[in-house]
Length: 434
Image (tube, rainbow, N blue to C red; front, side, top):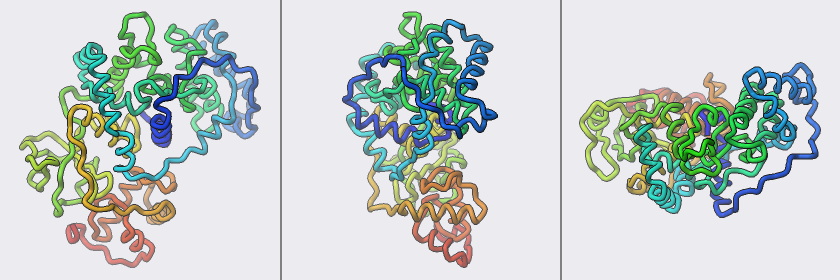
């Protein structure tokens, strides 16, 4: 879990899918120190002035020592600091599969995971109560991330973390980031939290039951069980306290405030206002006719909130508050972050979300990719043209919907694609077709 989610929301979506599939798998055994080393790709060193992996590694170790890592730790970790081209290939080849929010949330926020979350809150009541008192983060919020990231410790990954980190550090795609993460992992070892052979996690270098990057492990892990170590692999108390610390101080959680609530929106809502970048008082949304999902009126107060429509105006609708920013910081995939916020609300006792009245059309992968290409030609930055509806693509879709006088709910439709293919439609005020 990471503040950037390393600009690869794909990691979480694929990791969550793997977690659901492997929820009953036993935890991996510790591997022996690696003996065989895959030959580094010659292309991988282009950003290191042609330096070989061995030379790059020697310089990385010098940097770690300069940052306070002991020679003893360097020696202990060295057998694990080996290059693996397979890790680099996985990183470069990752792909998020286009999914409807209701499909993803239906699987990842399934009743069994909600019930497991509630059970863990009861089982570790003292640690959750302490974390809420000290950090202001509700138990349900912690439990939702815990469940999504590893199914409460069942699936934390099975690859040597140091090998993953140093391989990605030598690769040129995000070298500086993973150099820092490798040094942070060495610091975790140096202070006695984990040994090199205990560092087993995801291929992307995340560790523990809520999948901390090593920098987050160093900065936010706390010893909640009092045994002198910050053990996010085996100590549930440490996991609870550390996750609360990261959410509160790393993601700036606002004590006592809500995060996500399901709502019902009227057919004449000003759709161009439905965006996470638009915050209005709840009293204003109430004037527009927005209510809670069960029809109860919204409070007539000035608490800022955004209307979030993950599948457009015909899909589920949510009121997203300032605390929802913690979810998008944890993972910048809107599908993941909305699912995490929804699961937390379910663990806290909210009713299941209402199902759409009818089937919501989704553009096929190739057509969504074509739409992104047309948006780029129109001058928009959509990030990677990959057939995945990220937040940049959603913002561009909304802008074009406004231009063509379509309901500006950020959901790409066949009509919008047809308009952009033709390029000759007359723009109308967005209010004309709300």
